[in-house]
Image (cartoon, rainbow, N blue to C red; front, side, top):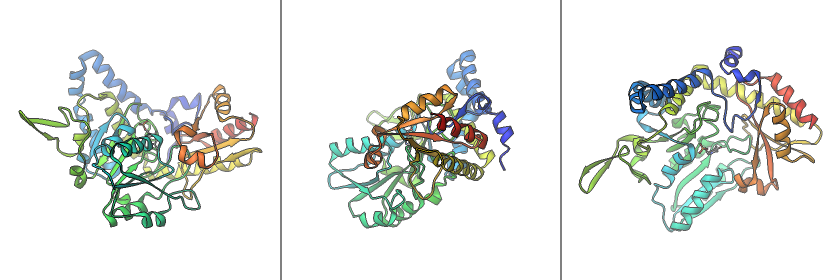
Length: 389
Ligand SMILES: *Cc1c(COP(=O)(O)O)cnc(C)c1O
């Protein structure tokens, strides 16, 4: 089980703040921050290239760590500066054209949906929205009924940014494989709080970020690309790392997922993110998943007991993200009052989840996202603070 005292000792600011903004950016544990500092200090002392040379074993370790975390091969992993660009490298590299169809869901992340809109304007493919089931998550039966020979891509979000649900990613994967349709999964909010296994889910591509439930540094992200799908994507950008200039007029892409990387990157961030993955693995993703789900259940239950508070989470399977509103109180106002008390939450705005929040007539929500280092005592103090607003 999780040694909560040790974990909290590794996260010193737990003593000063209540951090329920892990879906925004979590707190780095000590070994992760130390890795970041170590590389930055080397850069300062030895020079950037020299520091990178010294960090080589850790840089290579990044791929092995993510391979082990996601049940992929190390060469199916790319380091990308954030989850949005990781997702983009696949999506903008797909050759979608007139007559093609792409399936997504109302829980899709705003930046992904904006990219879908932009590319559909350029190339004339159609976007199909799969309906939600009675729990508000992707309706897998209806999804199968919607598939056509023109459907070229299923692009969905595992855990949406604006609510507690977990979409049935593996059931979607089964359909995608059965019908031979490319499957791009945004796992930005799931990796680090849920045991995510790309083989079990059956996705072809998966994008994620460092700073959220993985507890890595900001400005870091990653991409998984199934080896058999490499040639299906024409990377939207190319540089002298992702490709080799083989003759005057020709080039070859780098082997594996490296073709989706940039030559220049945040070396300290990559090393620290690799460390964050090892830290999470050492605790055990199954233990993390269980504890996060339990804490979030306790929080939902306690919030629903407050007069005027409504928990807004959808989904049958829920996770560590808890959203709510309080009658007569703007979510922004609640966020500010909590911040004054040293409690961090964030606000989900309609503009970042239009398809979902507009349909539910909600202009914004308070989002409280817990992680395994949080405690039931913090939840009690949080709930009291919400009561007092
Ligand atoms: C935060 C988030 C992203 C974007 O991640 P970045 O690293 O900020 O690009 C994508 N999808 C979901 C579901 C998110 O919550």
